[in-house]
Amino acid sequence: MKRVLLIIGGGIAAYKSLELIRRLRERDVAVRVVMTEAAQRFITPLAAGAIAGERVFTDLFDQAQEFDVGHIRLARECDLVVVAPATADFMAKAAHGLANDLASAVLLATARPILFAPAMNPQMWANAATRRNLETLQARGLSFVGPNEGEMAESGERGVGRMAEPEQIRDAVFAALSDGPLKGKRALVTAGPTIEAIDPVRFLSNRSSGKQGYAIAAALAQLGADVTLVSGPTNLSAPVGVKRVNVESAREMLAASEAALPLDVAVMVAAVADWRPMKAAKGKIKKDAAGIPAIALQENPDILATLSKLGKKRPKLVIGFAAETDHVEEHARAKIAKKGCDWIVANDVSGDVMGGAENTVILITKDKAEAWPRMAKEGVARKLAVEIAAVLDAKSPGRK
Image (cartoon, rainbow, N blue to C red; front, side, top):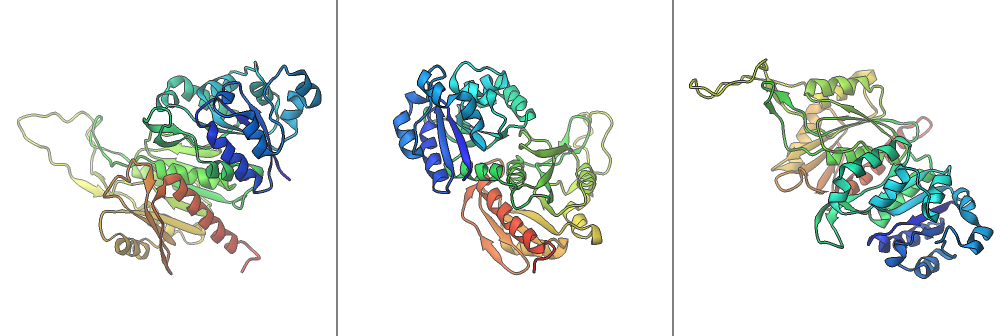
């Protein structure tokens, strides 16, 4: 039986931790709970202990608890430490190595893998201090799940900072506790927009935020894949365990994608600019009496088609994305035939998909089309990663 030490931090999202305990226990995971003093303002140790099936630990200086178990044993008698919710304060303490209460002392004393599920106000999550603490913890090898975008329970604000749902954290726990079905597989994900220079200050681009591609890279990594994320300019942090290569133009993205070979799977999510100026001006184009300048365009390389037609170097599975505004399935099927890829994930971007938190897609293969219900982009990513794992497992040597 796997053992999880759950540290519950002091935020309104602590109520979700009770459901997380239940979700883990129904999968035969033993859960031992540590609660911070602030967490006890939101939920009681009695409630957490009743669901976990054993007493909850709260005080570093409780003589009975320290004599019986102690923070060192708590740190060692588990397979994984999960912090949910991980508040801005707790992340700061962890980043700076503070250990002035039971929860932070356990975290500093453990040699086990650590998974954080952040939860805080969007402004706190976006604050430069929190971003530095996040980068510090990621550099030490800590894993993160969420936060998600949505409405904050305490303020009614919307933004990134909402704690991941219990099912999402549970899935991340199981990914951390196992090698995963994609262990040993090499994956490429492209994400975000490309930009094509007109002059030193202007460029052609699109509205892609990169959220869906980053979510897919994270989901593949959680299943054990060795993931390279080739990303155009975005405001997103690289997912834990993912190698990110930053590019700007379509030509740079193609070169980085080819450099990632050999691959088991390539998921081409990036919204690549179809055209670029034939010649970028070396100096800023001035607005003058000559009127609007004519900008001659030329076609960019087709990255999806290039990877789909590599012959022996071709990835076992090549997946494209089709952002359409009408006749979505029809255009996506034509794209499979034209590009030579295996699957197309088609989505209607006529609404709030580009830059939004949710997506509605149709997974189209050469044999079928499966419409998925509208869901968070993280949900689309996890579902697609599971589909990929099933196909790659079937293609493994010794499998029919």
